[in-house]
Image 1: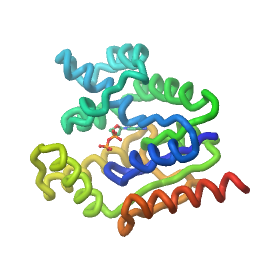
Image 2: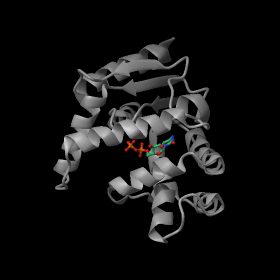
Image 3: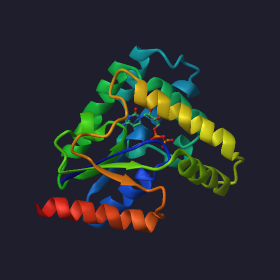
Image 4: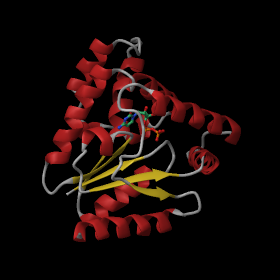
Length: 208
Ligand code: CDP
């Protein structure tokens, strides 16, 4: 079974994907980390983010089992990842890795921007997780503060909107809800409520 989860930044899709994977006994891949890992390697070596040939080469050698979330969650790495995510050759290479991960039994939960539309268009269940920008900015601000770092709501909100705009308007694999995806708006939901709603959707779709 493959569960495809897409949505904008700080919509809660990552937490939901992790919990769904553990609930249904599936493996989990946060595909955002694959873009972040490539961006981090370029940043660390002072290489230009637009160099597609180098990016593809790094992606080709990427080990999905060794992506350190605590390092890769840094703000500047997310920003660089979002800029690099427009490169078609890089996307092709990462999608290949992501599909290979999804195909291993017993299946997986993948979360990202293009899982239901490009990476796993035949997934058994597709969820599109969203929330109002202000709600997402509140969550992201709290998350950053809880890591002992500084964050200010207004700049986090601006940043999320800029990222949404870039992800939704790029030519290749833009962020959008697949026609057969179930929409889950978590603006008014805490994580427990969102998780139960998602489990209900998956269970209903598996039975049918
Ligand atoms: O949660 P947040 O938006 O901070 O970051 P992420 O999910 O780790 O993704 C970082 C960036 O990678 C996004 O802004 C997207 O531009 C890109 N990405 C993508 O293009 N396709 C994916 N399947 C996953 C991430």
